Image (cartoon, rainbow over the protein chains, first blue to last red):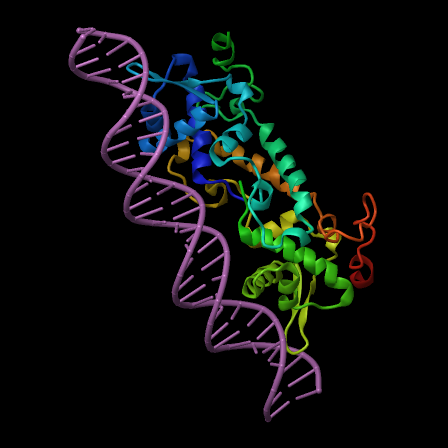
Amino acid sequence: MRLSNLADYAVVTMCAAARHCGGGRTSAAALAAETGLPVPTVQKLVSKLSAAGLLRSTRGSGGGLQLARPAASISVADIVEAVEGPIALTACADGGECSVDALCSVRPHWPMINEALRGTLASIPLTQLAGQPAKTIPSPRSAALRADPCTMPRAL
Amino acid sequence: MRLSNLADYAVVTMCAAARHCGGGRTSAAALAAETGLPVPTVQKLVSKLSAAGLLRSTRGSGGGLQLARPAASISVADIVEAVEGPIALTACADGGECSVDALCSVRPHWPMINEALRGTLASIPLTQLAGQPAKTIPSPRSAALRADPCTMPRAL
DNA sequence: CTCAATCGGAACAAAATGGTCCGATTTGAG
DNA sequence: CTCAAATCGGACCATTTTGTTCCGATTGAG
């Protein structure tokens, strides 16, 4: 019932990327510097996040990274699934085999549980987590949904 | 985002124990035989489940195991927490340290997420998972909440 | 008092994860 | 056209956690 460190780091990295969107493209090295994570780890993360369609990478000189979608439309579930694959508590619900197989009375119930958990994580947008570290507290509540520089200027 | 095999096995074991309550005490060996799990693994599980107050073990000759509470009042969250400890997606929410510490903008939000997930799992009672393997389908719905032999006779 | 069956902890083996490094590919600038 | 910068992708190694097994200690019944 704990997600892998990579998934945790991915959430932090995406948050950092969300803060950068206003100032244009970022690099994996820059994100590593901001988050305090090792550079190679961030490189591995952005690879997976790009493959999942959450980040957009531009190669070559002067290249960089940017959010592929507005931060408001990226949820924690999206990030977790990008790194860890489908959200499934048990291996038997994800194609893996189980030794008890047919006589297992709980297996039919896992899909429902998984879906409930996924729904909970899907209801948390990235904007809700991207609040600045400590200072410049934006406003009591719901400020994240308004003051996101990514949503408007770059969506068109 | 996947719970450990032990936690998965614990749910299966508790389901098997729930079916046994009518016939009196069970042994770890009997549960292993029914679930198809290795005997030592079940022994380790019942130790943790007993320590958490979910199972009641009687030692000595003729001893055995039984549910400490009615199956309706045991949730999946209880079982998972008994085996894996507190439900927390990240280590930083469980006393562990984090390299980014103060400048992490997402950490304040984890407790809320963890609580939401725990609530989801806490809403699933053991009776809902203890339906018989395949045959003797009890009734279309809500039958599990009625036909549990554990709740009434032994609760008093 | 003896026997039987259990719990509890310790030790070992295995798999998965996390972290690191290097080569290949691509693009902008000179 | 050539060079340089920066990313992507894969392979390799160390660490940690997980999973399994075994053996001693404790308890109750006969």
